[in-house]
Length: 471
Image 1 (cartoon, rainbow, N blue to C red):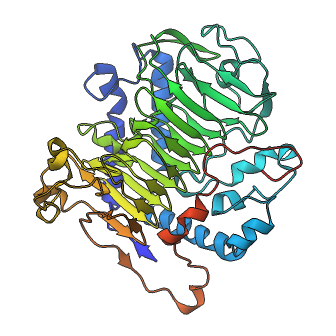
Image 2: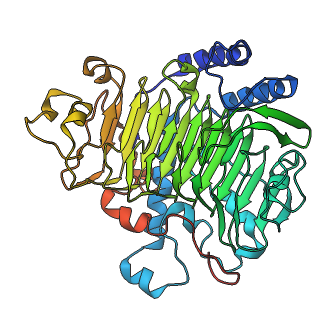
Image 3: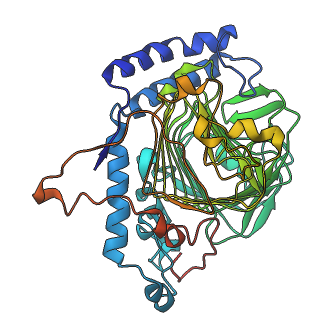
């Protein structure tokens, strides 16, 4: 299996020090604050402190073990299921093609056993259980007319409750949020059995909370909201600045799993995870028609994001995407078995020495030429300059620092499939392969190569679910 050169326990103690000063920095305005917070009052100070403690607890000082576990699960799912095109054709009821979906999609009684989903997270977000420990809350009303005293039966009323909740929907609906939807900890938003859209208004904010699952909804046409007084808990009203217009924003959030969500056309990012968010998995999602897709890491000046660890797996990066799939800073990022189709600038980028491990992805480059104006952005070393117009075929983009510095960042590609001239500029220490004892070889199954990506991502995005049929 692959092992990765990354931070050791010394770095872990550095993270402890960084987080010890995080809250005072926010209060003093000397760190990366933002996040829509006008004033960090006593309630939010407690939340920020709790978020810091949760992140430290969730941080894995040996992230390579998490990636190896994920790769093993991918292999076991495919080997155990023996997936072929004939299987998919003959078993139309069970539309599961990867390790996350095989955990629960082939069971027709999903509507009576919804919480099985909470056992299926993989990667760095693997311990996310959402509202599994709580009762069901049924959203019956698509309105969002009161952000201070939300109406019972609305999604906003559900997510501000202090207790764990598994939130489901009575019927299909389009929810247009008047302001950011502020979630509390231990929530699952489960759109199965209905066609749920968050659209034409503000997006979802997961700030200083932990243990959130967002599953099987559509998020699109998100706009910037004006801000003002918004209830972010049964116990608290907060004064918010104008929102950025992200689809889903993570700010100091821990244990977050975003799965089978279709996203497009948001004003800012589709998914942003900043301010030392960690233990994140983004899986089985479909992204289309957007510029800056996914930002993982707040700022080149905010090194507390070294604690960020995220898995991006089984997603389809589809038509009309330009860049940031994802764009990473500081942390450790496992990008595995995703499908990239005709990006316009670059696919995976970053700055501030993130560790990026790309395994088993399929990169299909565009056939569009890059304007001369942009050519320099794609010349990460001398070998890329060819004295002619380039195609947007380069997968990677390093920013801020020169190649003499970025060549030391660990960005490695293994088992990726490159089509239409796509190429990945590797750098930093190579992946280490440790011999596996004979008795363990059967259990130590690698990730699947990029040629498997079509079937692994076949059902990415929101899926149609009917009670009594596998979903």
